[in-house]
Length: 187
Image (cartoon, rainbow, N blue to C red; front, side, top):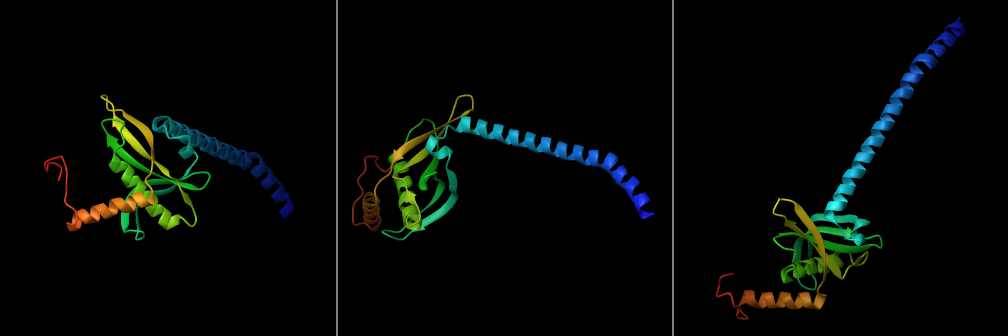
């Protein structure tokens, strides 16, 4: 008796339910493919707008908006915008600046150089840290459109950073007199 009922039930499942399940699975596959294509298109639009250097395009985001610090050779700290790990395992610091013009200031180079030195102290035994970094300069057009360029900069050495830190300390403690041409307007 069970065999007689089981066969029609199996036939019913095979003829009615299976096509329904196949159609559902096909709809899910198409929806997943469409979503993947949309993500790829969005990513491509971002790449086109961002104009990221080739070395960073294939890199992995290693750090994003993180506080970092080191105590040797001098106490340093900062909040790095991004650090990318290239395909070769090299860490490259990036700092974003909104500007009127595509320009790099000495202070930008010092800031990225401090980040490089801290990264070397934090990760130098596991990673190589690049001797260059990027200022991601964002300039708004007259029509409100963002124009982005990555400006590559050579970073200062550990010795140069230590020298700047010592000069800063000497100014703060009064061991060195301030000398400027701004007549006090900038401080």
